[in-house]
Length: 341
Ligand code: AHM
Image 1 (cartoon, protein in one colour):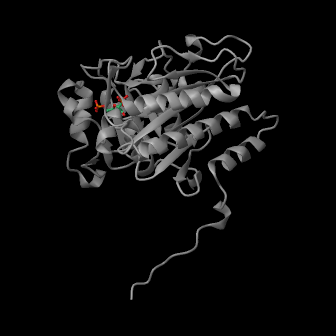
Image 2: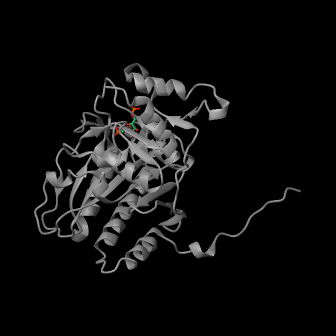
Image 3: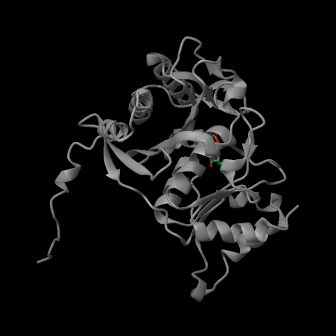
């Protein structure tokens, strides 16, 4: 007879919903007004609404292209639009969020009557090319503080990621998981469709110091700089003592590739190349939130030349090379590319 080792779940976690967790965090901050807590709750509400649509997508005639292209020149999927409108409409309520910079909108969306002192940057539906084939997609967001007494403009969003108050992402994968950091620590919450709540499932995540998985679009090899090419050959070399070759995994949804890298360690890289000399991924709402999460979990995030969180954005939709992962693996990448021009 097989002996099954099972113990009942930790009862102290009962009731640890995302909302409770956020509220408990607020009680620890003397003088907290509840605005930030309420804003985080609105974001989690948007995540609940979007996950509902994603889970029913094939049934509700929302798969496929709209026929339009977005500000990035990419074809827009119907779910892109639904996720974007959901996020904006939810953030518009309560008056805490004074403006949103979204991947799907050319200009920042400003809420002139709001006085909450916060801005949100968001990629409402990351990994669009995977929607129709039922592969994991996600939502990425960051929260910035702003002066509640002064009018908000597009320039208000152009601050380095090190100034973000919080960041997170939602992965619509085998489960829907919301990962959140307010700077200290990273926590994950898994969606329970029966209860209609996110429950704490990954407490204080630490990204392993090194891993054995590398994640990069190998189809771009011919476009890479010499340093990136040398690194990609190095990870594939046989060297048992150094744990090589690494295993290759690439989903093509940043949330999915980053989530795996955060939990299992290793490296995700979307470096600059001849097609995208400034990098492909967007600084404000893709790179910065991921960089904040990885650093808060003990990992690193670099452009290859500098810390992602130190980059000052030139515009709302600025792009940047993004390399995130285990500390050791990201430092090794930096060594390979340091002489690239
Ligand atoms: P999207 O904004 O169209 O969803 O593009 C962003 C995605 C990321 O999720 C992913 O990491 C990357 O683009 C994949 O790009 P590629 O297909 O060039 O490998």
